[in-house]
Length: 274
Ligand SMILES: C[S@@+](CC[C@H](N)C(=O)[O-])C[C@H]1O[C@@H](n2cnc3c(N)ncnc32)[C@H](O)[C@@H]1O
Image (cartoon, helix red, strand yellow):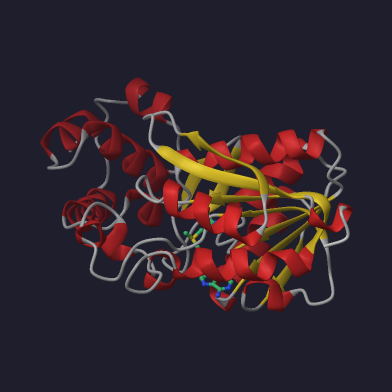
Protein backbone atom coordinates (compact mmCIF):
# COMPACT_ATOMS: atom_id res chain seq x y z
CA UNK A 1 0.00 0.00 0.00
CA UNK A 2 1.31 3.47 -0.89
CA UNK A 3 0.89 6.70 1.12
CA UNK A 4 -1.44 8.07 -1.56
CA UNK A 5 -3.81 5.09 -1.39
CA UNK A 6 -3.66 4.85 2.39
CA UNK A 7 -4.58 8.51 2.84
CA UNK A 8 -7.36 8.29 0.23
CA UNK A 9 -8.93 5.16 1.68
CA UNK A 10 -8.71 5.68 5.42
CA UNK A 11 -11.88 7.00 7.02
CA UNK A 12 -10.56 10.20 8.62
CA UNK A 13 -10.01 13.73 7.32
CA UNK A 14 -7.25 13.95 4.74
CA UNK A 15 -5.20 16.56 6.64
CA UNK A 16 -5.37 14.47 9.81
CA UNK A 17 -4.42 11.30 7.93
CA UNK A 18 -1.40 13.07 6.47
CA UNK A 19 -0.29 14.32 9.87
CA UNK A 20 -0.73 10.89 11.45
CA UNK A 21 1.13 9.06 8.70
CA UNK A 22 3.96 11.60 8.59
CA UNK A 23 4.29 11.34 12.37
CA UNK A 24 4.38 7.55 12.27
CA UNK A 25 7.02 7.52 9.50
CA UNK A 26 8.96 10.34 11.20
CA UNK A 27 8.91 12.44 8.04
CA UNK A 28 7.28 15.74 7.10
CA UNK A 29 4.19 16.09 4.92
CA UNK A 30 6.38 17.14 1.98
CA UNK A 31 8.02 13.72 2.08
CA UNK A 32 4.61 12.07 1.78
CA UNK A 33 3.96 13.99 -1.44
CA UNK A 34 7.38 13.22 -2.89
CA UNK A 35 7.05 9.51 -2.04
CA UNK A 36 3.28 9.20 -2.53
CA UNK A 37 3.47 6.15 -4.79
CA UNK A 38 6.21 4.16 -3.06
CA UNK A 39 4.92 1.11 -1.18
CA UNK A 40 5.11 1.11 2.62
CA UNK A 41 5.89 -2.03 4.60
CA UNK A 42 2.95 -3.98 6.02
CA UNK A 43 3.94 -3.33 9.62
CA UNK A 44 3.71 0.45 9.24
CA UNK A 45 0.53 0.22 7.21
CA UNK A 46 -0.99 -1.84 10.05
CA UNK A 47 0.13 0.66 12.69
CA UNK A 48 -1.30 3.56 10.71
CA UNK A 49 -4.65 1.84 10.17
CA UNK A 50 -4.91 1.08 13.89
CA UNK A 51 -4.19 4.70 14.84
CA UNK A 52 -6.63 6.00 12.22
CA UNK A 53 -9.32 3.73 13.65
CA UNK A 54 -8.66 5.06 17.16
CA UNK A 55 -8.93 8.61 15.78
CA UNK A 56 -12.17 7.75 13.97
CA UNK A 57 -13.59 6.57 17.30
CA UNK A 58 -12.94 9.99 18.84
CA UNK A 59 -9.41 10.02 20.28
CA UNK A 60 -8.11 13.58 19.81
CA UNK A 61 -5.48 13.93 17.11
CA UNK A 62 -3.19 15.84 19.49
CA UNK A 63 -3.06 12.87 21.89
CA UNK A 64 -2.23 10.48 19.04
CA UNK A 65 0.50 12.78 17.74
CA UNK A 66 1.68 13.60 21.26
CA UNK A 67 1.85 17.33 20.53
CA UNK A 68 -0.15 20.46 19.77
CA UNK A 69 1.21 23.65 18.27
CA UNK A 70 0.33 26.68 20.39
CA UNK A 71 1.48 30.24 19.75
CA UNK A 72 4.98 29.67 18.31
CA UNK A 73 5.65 26.55 20.37
CA UNK A 74 5.27 22.83 19.78
CA UNK A 75 4.01 21.51 23.11
CA UNK A 76 4.00 17.89 24.18
CA UNK A 77 0.54 16.87 25.38
CA UNK A 78 -0.75 13.73 27.04
CA UNK A 79 -4.16 12.59 28.24
CA UNK A 80 -3.28 14.26 31.59
CA UNK A 81 -3.62 17.77 30.15
CA UNK A 82 -6.09 19.91 28.27
CA UNK A 83 -5.14 20.26 24.60
CA UNK A 84 -4.19 23.95 24.30
CA UNK A 85 -6.78 25.88 22.28
CA UNK A 86 -6.36 28.59 19.68
CA UNK A 87 -8.59 31.00 21.64
CA UNK A 88 -6.21 30.84 24.60
CA UNK A 89 -3.63 32.62 22.44
CA UNK A 90 -5.70 35.78 23.08
CA UNK A 91 -4.90 35.36 26.77
CA UNK A 92 -1.20 35.32 25.85
CA UNK A 93 -1.66 38.49 23.74
CA UNK A 94 -3.28 40.38 26.61
CA UNK A 95 -0.68 39.07 29.07
CA UNK A 96 2.12 40.34 26.83
CA UNK A 97 0.52 43.79 26.81
CA UNK A 98 0.55 43.78 30.62
CA UNK A 99 4.20 42.69 30.65
CA UNK A 100 5.07 45.46 28.19
CA UNK A 101 3.26 47.91 30.50
CA UNK A 102 5.61 46.97 33.35
CA UNK A 103 4.64 43.64 34.95
CA UNK A 104 7.77 41.87 36.12
CA UNK A 105 6.26 38.83 37.83
CA UNK A 106 3.46 36.70 36.43
CA UNK A 107 1.49 33.68 37.60
CA UNK A 108 -0.36 31.19 35.36
CA UNK A 109 -3.04 29.45 37.43
CA UNK A 110 -4.06 26.04 36.09
CA UNK A 111 -1.12 25.85 33.72
CA UNK A 112 -1.81 22.37 32.26
CA UNK A 113 0.79 21.71 29.57
CA UNK A 114 2.35 25.07 30.49
CA UNK A 115 0.98 26.65 27.30
CA UNK A 116 0.31 30.20 28.52
CA UNK A 117 3.30 30.43 30.87
CA UNK A 118 5.71 29.11 28.25
CA UNK A 119 4.37 31.31 25.45
CA UNK A 120 4.76 34.41 27.68
CA UNK A 121 8.26 33.36 28.68
CA UNK A 122 9.23 32.68 25.07
CA UNK A 123 8.09 36.16 24.01
CA UNK A 124 9.32 38.13 27.02
CA UNK A 125 12.31 36.27 28.51
CA UNK A 126 12.78 38.79 31.32
CA UNK A 127 9.42 38.01 32.95
CA UNK A 128 9.65 36.00 36.19
CA UNK A 129 7.00 33.40 35.42
CA UNK A 130 5.39 30.84 37.73
CA UNK A 131 2.94 28.11 36.70
CA UNK A 132 0.60 26.34 39.14
CA UNK A 133 -1.51 23.23 38.74
CA UNK A 134 -3.39 20.92 41.07
CA UNK A 135 -2.55 17.96 38.86
CA UNK A 136 0.92 16.49 39.40
CA UNK A 137 0.70 14.75 36.01
CA UNK A 138 -0.05 18.05 34.30
CA UNK A 139 2.96 19.61 36.00
CA UNK A 140 5.16 16.78 34.73
CA UNK A 141 3.99 17.61 31.22
CA UNK A 142 4.61 21.35 31.77
CA UNK A 143 8.09 20.64 33.16
CA UNK A 144 8.92 18.43 30.19
CA UNK A 145 7.87 21.22 27.81
CA UNK A 146 9.86 23.73 29.82
CA UNK A 147 12.95 21.53 29.60
CA UNK A 148 12.67 20.72 25.91
CA UNK A 149 12.01 24.37 24.96
CA UNK A 150 14.70 25.63 27.38
CA UNK A 151 12.26 28.13 28.93
CA UNK A 152 12.65 28.70 32.64
CA UNK A 153 9.41 28.77 34.61
CA UNK A 154 8.95 28.12 38.33
CA UNK A 155 6.44 25.23 38.48
CA UNK A 156 4.37 24.81 41.66
CA UNK A 157 1.90 22.18 42.71
CA UNK A 158 -1.28 23.13 44.59
CA UNK A 159 -4.71 24.67 44.77
CA UNK A 160 -4.78 28.05 42.99
CA UNK A 161 -3.00 30.78 45.05
CA UNK A 162 -2.41 28.39 47.98
CA UNK A 163 0.39 26.85 45.90
CA UNK A 164 2.31 30.12 46.16
CA UNK A 165 1.49 31.53 49.61
CA UNK A 166 2.85 34.86 50.79
CA UNK A 167 3.63 35.93 47.24
CA UNK A 168 2.27 38.90 45.33
CA UNK A 169 2.19 39.22 41.56
CA UNK A 170 2.13 41.98 38.97
CA UNK A 171 0.03 39.82 36.64
CA UNK A 172 -2.12 36.72 37.09
CA UNK A 173 -3.52 34.84 34.10
CA UNK A 174 -5.77 31.82 34.14
CA UNK A 175 -7.66 29.55 31.80
CA UNK A 176 -9.41 27.58 34.55
CA UNK A 177 -12.04 24.85 34.20
CA UNK A 178 -15.29 26.63 33.36
CA UNK A 179 -17.82 24.08 32.12
CA UNK A 180 -20.85 23.10 34.20
CA UNK A 181 -20.93 19.42 35.19
CA UNK A 182 -24.09 18.72 33.18
CA UNK A 183 -23.14 20.74 30.09
CA UNK A 184 -23.83 18.87 26.86
CA UNK A 185 -20.58 20.20 25.33
CA UNK A 186 -18.69 17.73 27.54
CA UNK A 187 -19.87 14.95 25.22
CA UNK A 188 -18.64 16.69 22.04
CA UNK A 189 -15.39 16.95 20.07
CA UNK A 190 -12.18 16.30 21.99
CA UNK A 191 -13.76 17.00 25.39
CA UNK A 192 -14.77 13.42 26.36
CA UNK A 193 -11.09 12.40 26.17
CA UNK A 194 -9.73 15.35 28.15
CA UNK A 195 -9.37 15.31 31.95
CA UNK A 196 -12.54 16.33 33.79
CA UNK A 197 -10.40 18.24 36.27
CA UNK A 198 -9.29 20.52 33.43
CA UNK A 199 -12.84 21.15 32.19
CA UNK A 200 -15.50 20.95 34.86
CA UNK A 201 -16.10 23.57 37.55
CA UNK A 202 -19.05 22.44 39.65
CA UNK A 203 -22.72 22.70 38.75
CA UNK A 204 -22.52 26.27 37.50
CA UNK A 205 -19.19 26.18 35.66
CA UNK A 206 -18.16 29.28 37.62
CA UNK A 207 -16.81 27.71 40.79
CA UNK A 208 -13.11 27.81 39.86
CA UNK A 209 -13.40 31.39 38.59
CA UNK A 210 -15.15 32.42 41.82
CA UNK A 211 -12.36 30.89 43.90
CA UNK A 212 -9.64 32.60 41.89
CA UNK A 213 -11.29 36.03 42.03
CA UNK A 214 -12.01 35.70 45.74
CA UNK A 215 -8.40 34.76 46.58
CA UNK A 216 -6.75 37.22 44.17
CA UNK A 217 -6.76 40.46 46.22
CA UNK A 218 -4.36 38.96 48.80
CA UNK A 219 -1.96 37.98 46.02
CA UNK A 220 -1.82 41.03 43.78
CA UNK A 221 0.57 43.95 43.80
CA UNK A 222 -0.79 47.43 43.31
CA UNK A 223 -1.97 47.95 39.71
CA UNK A 224 -1.73 44.23 38.93
CA UNK A 225 -4.04 42.74 36.29
CA UNK A 226 -6.05 39.53 36.66
CA UNK A 227 -6.99 38.02 33.27
CA UNK A 228 -9.42 35.10 33.10
CA UNK A 229 -10.48 33.02 30.12
CA UNK A 230 -14.09 31.83 30.34
CA UNK A 231 -17.01 30.35 28.43
CA UNK A 232 -18.70 32.38 25.68
CA UNK A 233 -21.73 33.02 27.93
CA UNK A 234 -19.89 33.83 31.18
CA UNK A 235 -18.52 37.33 30.51
CA UNK A 236 -21.32 39.09 32.38
CA UNK A 237 -20.95 36.87 35.46
CA UNK A 238 -17.15 37.22 35.50
CA UNK A 239 -17.41 41.00 35.04
CA UNK A 240 -19.80 41.20 37.98
CA UNK A 241 -17.54 39.02 40.15
CA UNK A 242 -14.50 41.17 39.37
CA UNK A 243 -16.33 44.47 39.95
CA UNK A 244 -17.95 43.38 43.20
CA UNK A 245 -14.55 42.22 44.50
CA UNK A 246 -13.16 45.68 43.84
CA UNK A 247 -11.37 45.31 40.51
CA UNK A 248 -11.34 48.31 38.20
CA UNK A 249 -11.06 48.85 34.46
CA UNK A 250 -12.92 45.57 34.01
CA UNK A 251 -13.51 44.65 30.40
CA UNK A 252 -13.91 41.67 28.09
CA UNK A 253 -12.13 40.71 24.90
CA UNK A 254 -13.48 38.52 22.13
CA UNK A 255 -11.86 35.62 20.31
CA UNK A 256 -11.60 35.30 16.53
CA UNK A 257 -15.13 33.89 16.40
CA UNK A 258 -16.38 37.07 18.12
CA UNK A 259 -17.22 35.17 21.29
CA UNK A 260 -16.63 36.98 24.59
CA UNK A 261 -13.65 34.98 25.81
CA UNK A 262 -11.40 36.78 28.31
CA UNK A 263 -12.32 39.21 31.05
CA UNK A 264 -9.74 41.14 33.03
CA UNK A 265 -9.59 43.72 35.76
CA UNK A 266 -6.95 45.79 37.49
CA UNK A 267 -6.35 45.77 41.24
CA UNK A 268 -5.85 49.37 42.29
CA UNK A 269 -7.12 49.13 45.87
CA UNK A 270 -3.69 48.70 47.47
CA UNK A 271 -2.77 52.05 45.89
CA UNK A 272 -5.63 53.68 47.79
CA UNK A 273 -4.89 51.88 51.04
CA UNK A 274 -7.80 49.36 50.90
C1 LIG B 1 -8.75 24.48 31.18
S1 LIG B 1 -7.25 23.73 31.76
C2 LIG B 1 -6.08 24.94 31.18
C3 LIG B 1 -4.72 24.40 30.88
C4 LIG B 1 -3.78 25.41 30.21
N1 LIG B 1 -3.63 26.62 31.00
C5 LIG B 1 -4.26 25.77 28.82
O1 LIG B 1 -4.81 26.87 28.65
O2 LIG B 1 -4.12 24.96 27.89
C6 LIG B 1 -7.39 24.06 33.50
C7 LIG B 1 -6.23 23.58 34.35
O3 LIG B 1 -6.52 23.95 35.72
C8 LIG B 1 -6.05 22.93 36.57
N2 LIG B 1 -6.77 23.03 37.84
C9 LIG B 1 -8.04 22.64 38.13
N3 LIG B 1 -8.35 22.92 39.40
C10 LIG B 1 -7.26 23.51 39.94
C11 LIG B 1 -6.97 24.06 41.23
N4 LIG B 1 -7.88 24.04 42.21
N5 LIG B 1 -5.75 24.61 41.44
C12 LIG B 1 -4.83 24.64 40.44
N6 LIG B 1 -5.05 24.15 39.19
C13 LIG B 1 -6.25 23.59 38.96
C14 LIG B 1 -6.34 21.65 35.80
O4 LIG B 1 -5.57 20.57 36.27
C15 LIG B 1 -6.00 22.08 34.37
O5 LIG B 1 -4.66 21.80 34.06
